Length: 97
Length: 147
View 1 (tube, chains in turn green, brown):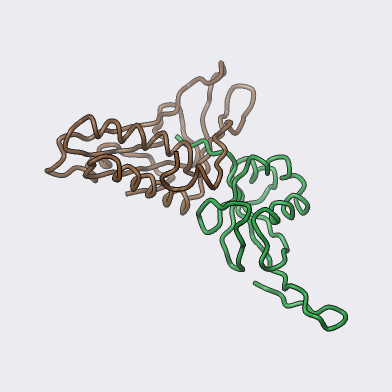
View 2: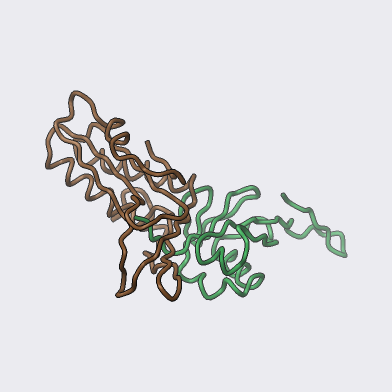
């Protein structure tokens, strides 16, 4: 979902999108929710999104350095650009088996 | 078959899904909840997972296995929710013409599952509970074919 924004001078600023981030395990328990929403400019990278998540949800911040981000069910580098509608998930260190 | 399920795991049924007339060997790995960890008495475990991604990552591991060993069938199941002592949390079945390949491929598959598949376990022990320290994943280590 994108929200076109027009600045005071009529100049268009980058549209904002709402990024829904799925949470699991310790992250889910800390947030008390299966997902959180973050408002972000369209075209941001995974690395920038990490900072926005930490700022919007400080309770998650201590766990973010060890968490991977998955975009559309694949692990993504911090340089990866997020598109509106992408499935975003925070993946803490895995412990299956 | 690559599946995350809340239901009890059935090893005999899983073996049947990989068995063919060309397979002289089927190797089965079962991960089972044990009653102790880190000197603590374990009461039960809680498993969480990201099912669509976990199933995708299991299929990627199967592709890696098939590129390295002459396997004729491979299947993986991981259970979620509350598991009691003795319950199977994960099953991997690998079939191949000869036993060495089936055993090695099965060993590789469970090691990779523990590195990349988004599943988590919380240990509930006498006196507390804790999400167990896991393996951090990066885009590099989590990519298909990475080791």
